[in-house]
Image (cartoon, rainbow, N blue to C red; front, side, top):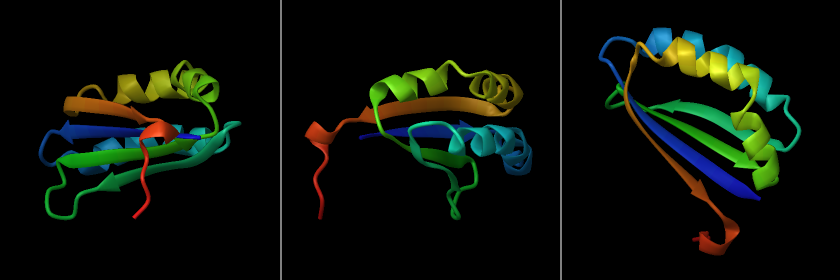
Length: 98
């Protein structure tokens, strides 16, 4: 199992447009083989800070997801609103529980 954390900074005032663009990808991704969790979170103190939290059964299934049509469509639809993004993949060897 592994996690992907994608943190994006969006243009002020565009959170509703970003959500509308992301929802088809979220719905399709949650149906994909190997997807355990796929959530879009908006910072309640700063709505320009949006985080996607993903949990996958394997790297191969995550890689297939990244190549999917709905991810490509989301990237195109979200492009006008995204200022920056940072993506981290976390593997079990580096995860500690508290």
